[in-house]
Length: 188
Image 1 (cartoon, rainbow, N blue to C red):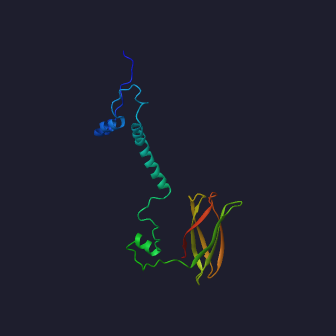
Image 2: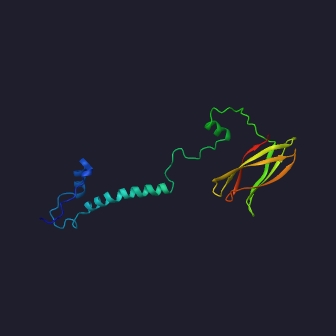
Image 3: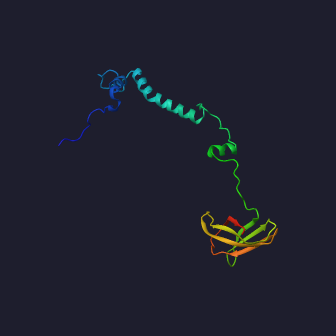
């Protein structure tokens, strides 16, 4: 068995046909001096330094220019802000402009919150804006925890005289509820 020794000079096979010319350029003529590395002429030393230094310099200058915003960017400048009508036209090009959405304005929630005490309860203040009594109305509420996850829902029965305000308090089972979100108002 032979001890493993150096297998010879490493070749730059990945360069393909440029391997031999580049090697000849870097190495120069074949050395006859045993101290050829330390006795290289200045021209050869400068060639080697240039091959190493120039690419590093190009990369460094490019990075510095990019970091200093010296490279011009084509089309630079902020895009003009779109108006709400332009945004709507872009997102919904076939939207009919004459859409009317019926909104129930007879019943209005003035305030809604969750109170904690001996038991957790939902407190809601509603106002009847119509000229008629609302006997079988309702406020549908979603209850959520502090992270916004829904923990339950509740319907608050509402009975309010014409043009008046009423405060309603209703116990809830969801003790971890933090927010009350009004989903729907019903007037029957």
